[in-house]
Length: 126
Image (cartoon, helix red, strand yellow):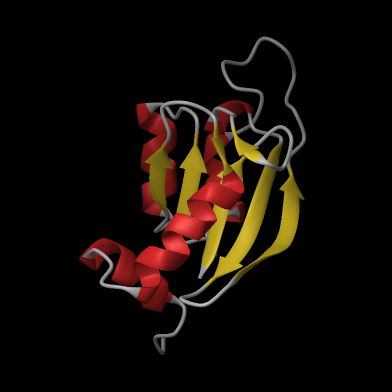
């Protein structure tokens, strides 16, 4: 399963979804995780509420099952959910490695139904 992290330094979930110019994408399963790629998004003109178009960003992240953010507004969250991505807001900056280790442990055990569904999302035939 692919998981996205809105980040400034590629090590911490510390960026608002609408302002994130970088999203670190990791592949994770019950046994391991690896950095798959870093997707970069161009800033829009000054004067817009967000630096990026949240709808098109969500479409470009649609292969991710989960997206970790520092903050996300209601309309942006709707775009994310519409693209079948589960948004997760963290209250304080959290190291990406810490989240991945916790997820790996959870996936190896008995994950919540929403997480189990996300894990098997890419494994199901169309």
